[in-house]
Picture 1 (tube, helix red, strand yellow):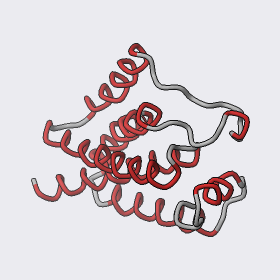
Picture 2: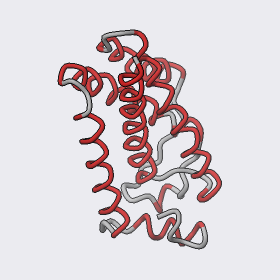
Picture 3: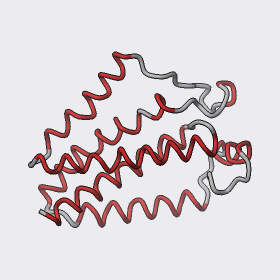
Picture 4: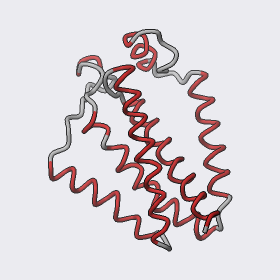
Amino acid sequence: ACSSGTSRERILAIMKDSHIGSYGVIGLIFYFGLFYLLVSSLPIELAGCAILAGDPFCKGVSSMIINRLPYARKEEEAKNKTVYSRMTSREYVFSIICAFLPLLWLPQPVYLLAGIFPVITWYFLTSFMKRKIQGYTGDCCGATFLLCELSFYMGFVIIYQTI
């Protein structure tokens, strides 16, 4: 949606439409295709460890979007009339613990390096959102999670193939 609109307002209007568009369908096809290719390139036990660690870790990384960016719309313009505020110190610490704890599923410490990939992905995506729409929306949160997750698995596969 960010490339479809010419202005911030047009981008936000496109994103507010609840119908999935052609970009959404193509994105999901690529997501599931890449997910399958990456996970199936690992031995089954390692794939299970990657999924058990990667999913919650990437959700934790993605959740930090609310600490970096403001919500792109006013509360009354939001689809569900909810605008999230920045995390409190307690929420931030709890989120970090919940993100890092599942990394204990990883069989070797070297696989922790896969966590760098979603952090980099998150940084570039949030920088792009800041530039294009001066904030985030629910669609941005979902896309950020899925791309962070794919980048984790990509890093995981790269590490697996190099050790």
